[in-house]
Length: 382
Image 1: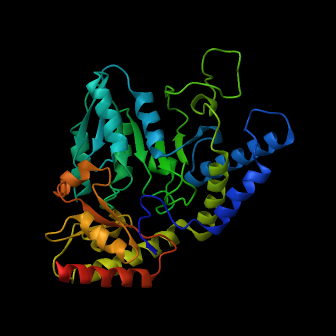
Image 2 (image 1 turned 120 degrees about the horizontal axis):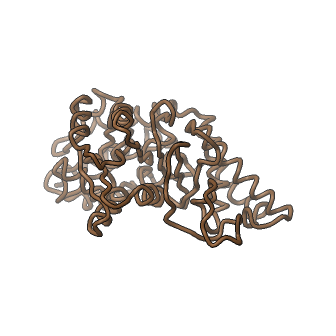
């Protein structure tokens, strides 16, 4: 099997992650923060260690500002709904995932808030102007993806964060497709709220996500319940991270994520990016030579604006039919709309979807060679 669907979730996981999760069932099986016995204390300590690693990795303001969630979708819902108030307005990009679009559309339909969509252009200055022109007097935040999960386009998020702050707005960033692949520094990049998955580029287990807050951010909680603290109070604690972490945490997932972060740091984010991007450069250069293959981004003329994600189609074939043919020879790719209708409308692929290729640090050149040969066969037979 050749796995090229790492934008959905990374596979395989580093062996150290697998071992960390397995060992955690034996050594750290207690509920964190809910007991004074040795295993409960040890489990809580393991979660604290992971929280610190996350804060260091993203250069967050404080360890307590790292909130564990179950995926990036949960984190984005917590951010959006925690900021939403009557008559609030948001500005988002035309590349956003449904994890951003759907919460906002739901709030809009309920009459709670509204949003505008700004076009991401090939020209960074034009992108900046597009966002600026969408800002209203009641705008509270700019929300932007770190990279399109379909086409790999990286918006000029540093410019957008500066724009947000100049207008006294918050900057919220969906880092699911770049965390662990592109270096992210919350302070230097001006990110007020960072949301990401723990199971994609960070190589942790599924069921892990992160919501990281800047110290100045005031966010309402959308989930209340047991936190192991202030238990006599009927109101949710205001202290972090307890305010946003109700219920039993995913102990095994968090411990696996902790080990995954060690692996990513050891192997260097830039090195990981160069490996994955070099494979896609090779793939792109070969796919553009194949008759009937349609590419959507000129990836390698402007590499700094693209994450290692590539989408293509074969003329007169639906993307899911191509993916099915590739699956029959052992190549695992994602096809369809990738939960990102805005991006597909932008590129005119809403009727066919696209075939998405997303390698990992473990992908080999021979894997890409096999993919290319398989695409050639499909394109010729069509």
